[in-house]
Length: 156
Image (tube, rainbow, N blue to C red):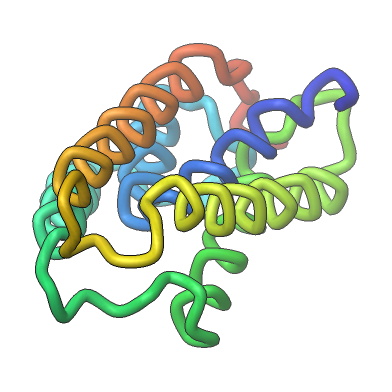
């Protein structure tokens, strides 16, 4: 992957694993001026709300009635979050449109690989442990992406 698109793909991958974790990461990145333009809210209220939503999603994901991430509305939301995140985190010397595509590619990969890693039924033995491991991967990757994202000038 080209220079500057790795963060875009990465935030998309996080969106595929945990969509609200990607939103929280984007909000934290915006607060650190690591996103393109001013489209991503990064104020204290936005960060708190996005972080709370991420934690709620992690808890809700373990419930027996949690929907499959591959159903069309969920999959479409992950693609959209990946695209916006990819656009926002693509490097200064990269095309933001290509960043959006890299984010969408990451979302596809995260959605499908995350689901495959969880297995066919999260209620089976080991489902909770795999779900918690997926939470840890998503959160850890999100932290790494926010820290590694380029500082973006405000007029980018």
